[in-house]
Length: 76
Image (cartoon, rainbow, N blue to C red; front, top):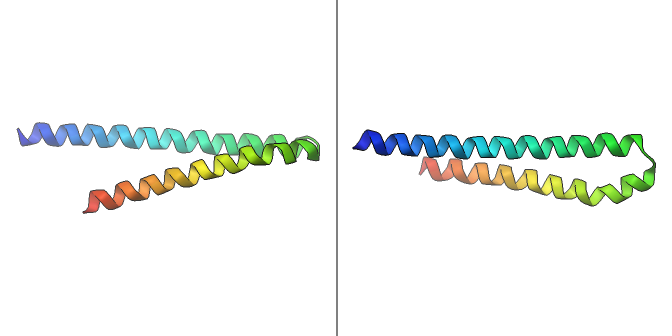
């Protein structure tokens, strides 16, 4: 019984980690695309895309905050 519970917890943790990693890669890809696009096009596009970059950076910080919370909860 206890092994089955541990296996379920292990699978859940694996699932959460996969989701977190995919979100991080998606956000980093978005930031890279925005930085590449803004450096190749005129300054007006750079100004217009700054809010998108800010949103991507906030999303990345939220992901790392979530990871930190998960780690602190798993330690206690």
